[in-house]
Length: 456
Image 1 (tube, helix red, strand yellow):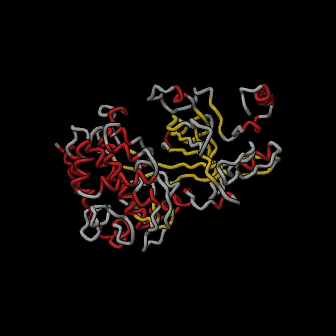
Image 2 (cartoon, one colour):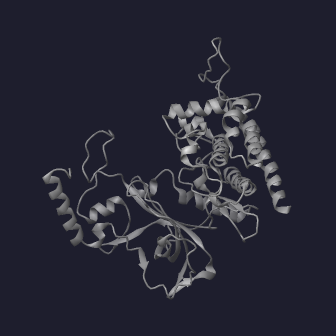
Image 3 (cartoon, one colour):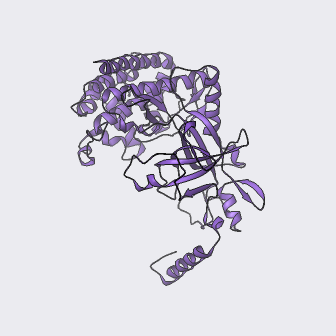
């Protein structure tokens, strides 16, 4: 449809008229989520934000696939709105249990994650199932409670709708069927022409978890940041060793800050297991697959090297999280403007082709000298702990004498090489337990240093 042409404008007007007259279910209306206009009976407190969306409340029906029961919650505030019609359309809310005419605040707050994930036939068969993994984490830790916090699943399942007196899973297939149209899988060729009804099969899922955390950008200083990262990675290691689940997406978005009180030491919470997979508890690795969040993806992950994905990839992502936050600033008071970031080499971790990004990281990580001069030297100058923390993590990850650096030794012409099984990023897989133990030691050491700051 071309709006610049008469036929295109006519078609657009025709659609607008039809949309104004069609039933709600054909507009994609979600009957399981209802806006609350009269909030007088809701004991949910006021908004702590200037965002007008924080004053919008919803009651949400949350269906659990395991118990086959539906529980109603009422939102307190919106954490993440769905600002785009494309992709997963993820929305997140803080909510409390709905009790009759109002909110039951005594039940505590939960985080609701509402999204549309790619699905297979049937929709329960999608190979990466966060709800299934969270259920395994919950069941494991309920039997052997750890001394760290973890994402505890409360309710998890597919959103269900009633169509012609039948309960159905809310999928793109169900939406097209209600409109009397058959959905068609899109062509594999991205350049091929596609019809409007050629859409991915997606399933609508809703997950409730606790505790409720805040963005990692809410840490107040570098000591808090180190403590939060250390706690989150302890959670990561426990989930990998006890549950056999590899996270595969360590990033600033997936580590939250949890505070029990205003003046208490914060804790770190690892979330978002959408890309996680179950692995063999002994091998603790997954098949090669390029997944994650730029600019935090490991080099092997970016290049999709023919080597197992394992804990070292996630620990490498942690190093990039530390470097990124230390460069751009860990709080609004320290934030570096994008224009200033353009003068730093770390910008190459998020722009360019995958090979360009991977080559930049190899160059920056290859030696202690290059890492300090190119990356650490550009950290915000007010930080004292973070430079030492980053250097220690780098040394544990890339300084192992059995597989040092990120390149092979220079050849006779002075060129660096990455080919063959002797590539350090492939070779280090044989020493994963030793390297991870060193990394965990670094984390514990700097966590103690950071905690000492609160005792001064």
